[in-house]
Image (cartoon, rainbow, N blue to C red; front, side, top):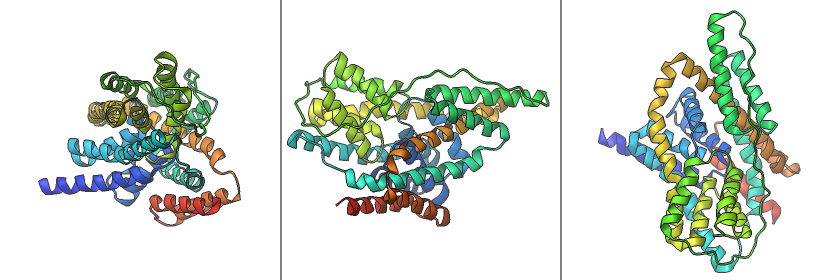
Length: 385
């Protein structure tokens, strides 16, 4: 038994270290690559089980893709797997970000990665769309769920808050399922969805100035609070960090914060590795370690608490219908963010060909998406130099 567990932990470490090194493009892209690895290639989970984890992940705060890795680790190898999968997914991004923070302080600017990302981004668009297509075939089980997904996509496209969309979709799905059991025609229901978005443009490269030194304890608790309450994308993270670090406490300058967010965008793995960069600016290597642990620790705790509840939810018809609604809304959010990112990623004939070729290769052959990402980066480098 111990040998089997050790083998599973080793497999988890290999898979999530690799994903941590090559998963560019944000949470939707990370989750698409995880689905490719653990569902399509390795058959660790069924699509239905993967979708259940996706729905649960979207209902708790913190970095979605990291929480997905932690969920998968727990499903595969219990509590030890939870720690191994999550840590291995985080580690590459944290180490890369730490090295970039050192270079930023030492040389006064960020390294350029424009050419590489030029080729990677359109490939990631194809990877995410392929995952949404495959997962949608399992998730859209009824016409009602398809309608819920379309309404969720429309609401999010018009600017509705992601959490409100997820909860609203779950409530609508649960109510419509309940009403369908009692009447031939289910009433048409719409939930009120609150509106709220946070957007920003990528920062340019600026010279590094000395940040205000901060004690390790307040640094840890600040990032622990961020990891415990933050829903949404890396852009929401920017707004959250700016309110405290720049405006309230003045630990960082505006330029330093924008550079920290830029690093989170250009490195693989979770965007929350921005905390590693900020921690290094405020407290050197110890600060980087403390900030990284602080922002990711709540994710491990939330998954440990919520993971065991999933089977109970599935046993309840109403709760199961609610989860189905959350799942199709999650896929709708992935589709919308892919559309939004696609407009920035597919900008000319070269990127259009990369996206189309990647999509065709994924549909026709069982290619590992990691190799497509690396190939896209090489094409981008060769094209821009």
